[in-house]
Image (tube, rainbow, N blue to C red; front, side, top):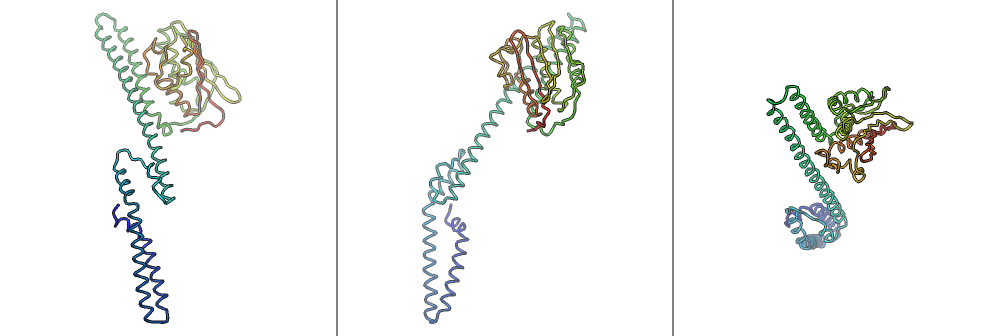
Length: 341
């Protein structure tokens, strides 16, 4: 900071000084002796000007080095104001420095969080692209062997690959929109069995090919949620059950209700979840020992489902015993818990 800039910062003090001098001058002007009046006016103004100049200059020189340091650090890539707080004698300035440091730390945390999210997103996209390319390559391989297989076989296998690609495309779409969820939801009363049957119909081919029985409650039950998002949540859970249930298995879908909540329960008699993995199934990118052993997975399905459920005001609970069953309960609270974030 230059001296002229410092003087500009003191313009209010300078204006005050001149008004003070005018007032003093008027007092002396009203004195009795005409000769004394003139000499006193000149003397007071001269002395006042000298002392004011000394005051401004001494204050500037006392903080010149500090201002230079601040100018240097504002041009730095990593500014840090912490070390300057002790150099200010003005308590108000110290308070502002503390505020700036606090904002700087928060900004640093937010940047690190954004960087981590960006890295996770990049990792997910790389994994997602790899899976899509794998299914495209499989489709090409199936078509290249068209001379040795029937048309029905080719259509059947291509449909399988298209369904898998479609699931991955849906996953990345929902993943990209999860942070803007509050702009894209509509809570309404939904008949549960209606959208459940639609999901079962979508995966009917897998049910048939693996000879998996499905049992769905018959009563008309209703929940309050967003049809699009809750359908995706339930679809992910049913699809997981289909993947990890062996042939001739069974998937049951039940509905329970009490005074506090409604529960949609999806249970299978598949391979289950390892006990050491049960508390981590909702972590982003977590596939678990079962997922790595039996199927290649992005580990995003349950993560997205749980995050969406929380935003809708629902909860997801999972119980499982490895080698016996997995039971997933989606809880719809009857109280007003739709605190959309």
